[in-house]
Image 1 (spheres, rainbow, N blue to C red):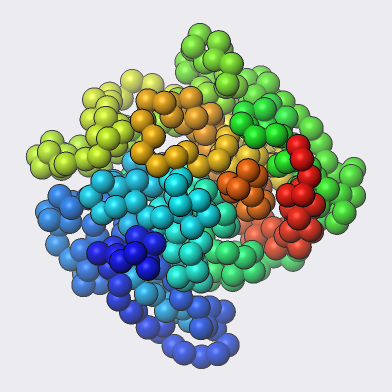
Image 2: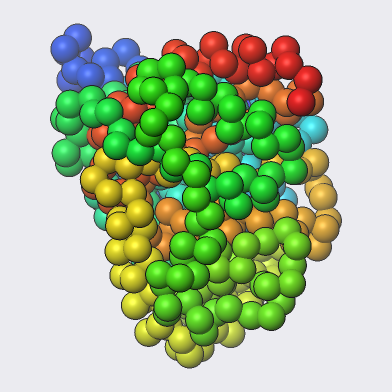
Length: 433
């Protein structure tokens, strides 16, 4: 198990050499780590839980995504700690310890790709692989003050990765700078070579930013000023995303509840979107792992135990509606963005919670978080979380989201914007909001 000098990020250390050491390879000289959900030939894929590891054999093949970055010239240095069965966005693991958030040691690192994010944030590796179903790359990226991408659903192979919920599972990655994030994309994405394109519009959904627990301007102004400096102010548009979604996505109606409409901290249509996503996620999780859970009765940590057993009670009621909702929502969001439009979102509603916070006190935060996270989840669009420095000594982040298949465009845009963003962050950190 990991030592203190590893920030608790690693399950086990080993070296997998790149397929070739050519200096011309895009990832030559870089090191990386992989979440313990990826198969690596000769190692048991532990899925964050010792009972899982105990009841499964060592993998006989390495996941194609891991092989791709090895072929790209990078060296793998080990497997990282994750939340049990990928069923949490907190990053706490009662069996293997909680990786230490290098930006805020008294706060959670975010999960479920906790160790992968910490390994990058603590400069133990140059980049790392994680997975994102409901937010498991985007959340730890924001909490640890690094970049993280959830790619378009289905564009990076999930073969050799333990499934959580296939309708939403993606292989994502973390880096400390946008250039390395983009280089990894050139290796993993099937269509990475796109000319840098000026976005047609940058859409700011004001209702989504009202979910933030920190001053809205601290997040939006940094990005808007950077966009205006590079592309002009005419491409910045302001919308109410909740109203647009409620108007355009009629299949949300079965998931709209009175509770959603009266909660002051939420946007009813996005809360309904989150409800639908989590229902389908529970249903698919049950189909994937219900039999194993019932047979083995694994020892699971607080919060995760309750979610796993709730999933096992899921029926197929409304599952057909969830599938049609995905199609309708993707179409509506595609219409909103157009070919090269970009949606700006808070990655999460606020700073990382304190370690060992009672799960029940986090319910409001989780509800707001999943309202935001479900937008890319249900649409299948690509999303990059970008660090925006610190507010009150805690990490701040913003996300850019682009239509399905626009991953190369989005990575190029983030790289183009980031120099200006850094300048604006320096100004913002000196400003009292």
